[in-house]
Image: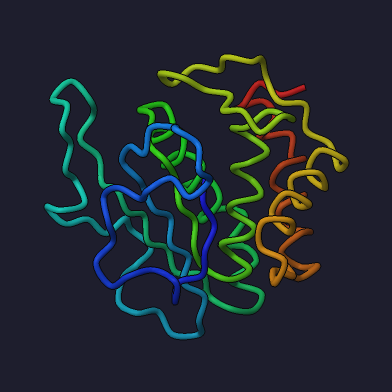
Length: 190
C-alpha cells in the first residue's frame, strides 16, 4: 500500500506503479483512493469516478472495477460525520475488492487520506505488514483491533512519511470507526 499527497500524483493516474522498495515483488495494477477535503465540492465526487482507462483489466476473469475512488470530504462537523459513515466504509469496500484481486493500493489526500490509510492498514494487513486477504477472504485470521495496534500502524505511516502529522480529530474518527461494534460484527474482528 502506498500513501502520497494529491499533489504528488500525476494528472493522468498510471495503471502500474513500479516497486520503489528495491525488491522483486510484482508491480501489478494499482487502484487509487483519492480524498479531497474542501468546503466546496468539485462537482459530485461522492460517487466513484471512473473512465474507460480506470476500468482496464488484462485478465478477463478478473472483475472489471474502476481503479479510482474519488471522495469529497467536507470540512467541519458535517465532514466528521461523512468521514466515519461514508468515506471510510466506501474506501474499505473499494480496497477489499482491489486487494483481493492482487492490486496495489495508493491512498492520497491529506489528513483524510492518512485516516483512510490507517483504517486500511488495520483491517487488511497483519502486525508484520503482510496482506491479510487473498481472493476476498481473510488468510491470516481476523484482525484484533485495539488502540495499540492502531498506534503501531500510525507509526508505520509516520516512519514512511515523516512529514505526516494527522490531527487528533482524524485519529479520533479512525478509532470511532475501527472500535465501533458495527464494524467489528461486519469484519468479524475480535
